Length: 302
Image (cartoon, helix red, strand yellow):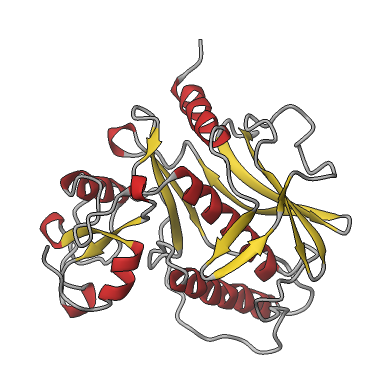
């Protein structure tokens, strides 16, 4: 008999398989044109492990050649279901990004599709320089994603979606937007990694630098965040995020749009944390990404 994690993964996979993307992805205001399908074997896409059944594979012509992208959802050796993005170009392939479907599960049986943005490349020579370069790429990449409207916490955790297996739906974004965003993050991260065989012409090169970034790098805990009351911290615990979404009927309190309207819903401090606002339920609200970006540090009390 299948346990809950298998059932949840199959429900999620079916939802993704039934969602058809167009032949292009949107990166902010930039459109990357492509076509459905790949011509090569990429990681496990021909091994029968992928419960997406090769439904989401695309080829994007870029300056370096044809960038083939394969999304794969399968149970890894640690018995966790994980959604992966593999790329292949000019004979070089690798994994660029992934999110876990099981370990991010928190309150009310919902699954948080989250992942820490980090880089792990190793370099010959100075270990200090290598660490500093990885940290600098993390800062620059997270800043870019925020400007593109992605929900990035101060801990560099990207929150792509909240999946409710009972409702068989994403509650804070649409499925097609989630797929678009997952592919965008994966392709952009591959550019920043610098070892996947391609660089996007829309971004500056990000090869290893010869100087050390000296920004502050505080110790941070791994997701999932525990449901604890800590009003003095800016980061919003995952369980509290879902409570805010339910309180606001899963729609933006400013414009009224929800995931069915194509909105990406963020959780925001009404009185900004930078202006003394606390991380507590009555100071948190649901805003779509557009309203959240336009709000900046203004006070909104819907």
